[in-house]
Length: 441
Image (cartoon, rainbow, N blue to C red; front, top):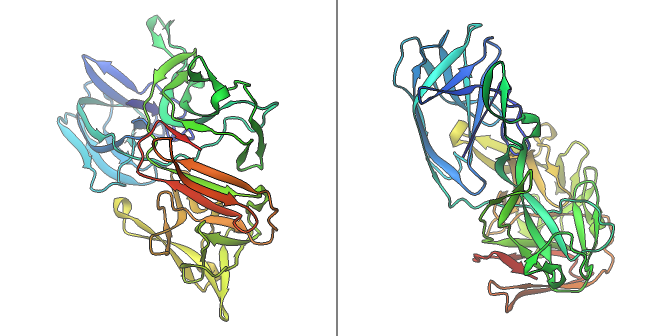
C-alpha cells in the first residue's frame, strides 16, 4: 500500500500523484498531514493498493495538531479532485474527528483513494492522525489490453515482453542525505516511475535455462511488429505460443519485486486484414464478432447495419426516414451514478465516442465506458470479454487466411479452432473459467 502526497492534483497515467511533496511527517510516533503555508497550496494525496485489489472501507481519526497554525477541511475526493465524497472540518483544539466511508457495491471503491486537505488562511495547516484503518479485498478481477513494450523489431525474436502497469510505485534510488543540517533517507520524485511487470509471449525457442527470456532471438518466429498510431500488431509465423503472467516486476537498479497474478479469462480478437482499423470519418459496422451487427434499436442481429462515425465522434445510422444517433446517459448522483447507452433523433443530443481502432468507448482512462453486448444481444456498456468490435465498412478484406487454435486450461486439448478467411474475416475467441499462469495457442 502506498500513500503519496503532492501540492498539485496532477496524476500519472496510472492515477497516482505525479509531483511529490513533503506533506507527511511523523511526530511522537503519530503521522501528521500538512497543507502548505499559502491557502492556494493544497495537500493532495493518493492511497493505493496494487491492481487486482480494492478498498472496501476506510476510517481516519484525527486531531488538530499542536503545531498547526490554522484549521483544515479534510476531504475524500474523486480521481479528478472535482467532486467531494466525504468531508470533515478539523478546528483548533478538536480531537477525535472522524472521516469514513464503506463500500456499498462493487464499483464505488477501487484500488486508489484520493484525499485533499484544504485551509483558508495563508498559514500551515496540520492534522495529527491518531488512527487510520482500511479494509480491502484481493478478489478484484481486472481487464488488461496487452501490447508490446516496443513498436518495432529489428529482427525476429522468440520471446516478447508485454508490460502492464501494476499501480505500484518504483521510487528509484533511496539514499541518505543531509539538507539544512537534517539527515534522512531521500528519493528524487523526478526518478519515480509507475512499476510495470511483463507478460511474456514466447515459443519453445524463447526459453533459456528453463525460463522465458524477453529478447531471445531463438527461431525468430515472433517475426514483426507494426504500429498504426493506436494499435501494435504482432506478426507470428506458424508455431505454438504461450502467453505467461509475470512473477516479478523489475524496479530501477535491477531489483526484483515479486508479484502474483493469474489469468482467469482471455479474449483474442482476430481480423485477417489489419487495414480494417477504424477512425473518425469512416463508415463502420459494429459487430459482436459472431456474425451479428448492431442496429438502430441497439440490438445485434444478422443484418449488417452501416454507421457513420463522424469527425466529431458522433455515431449515426438511418432507420426508415429518420437518422438515429448514439447517446451516452448518466443518472444518479456521485457514488450511485449509472451509465447507459441510448439513442436520440437529435444531433445536438448525440454523444462523441472515442476509438482505439477496434472498439468504441465514451470518455477516457478509468472513466470510460465500452460499447458491449449482453447475452440477449442488446447493446450495453462494459461487459467483460463481450466488447463490440468496430469494422471499417468500406475496406475490402484481403484473403490473408490463417487458422487460430486456443487450448483449454490444461494446455493439452484444443478448446477453440477458427479459420480466418474472406468468409470469416473477423471475430473473437473467448476462454473462460480458467485459473492459469499461462495460455497456450
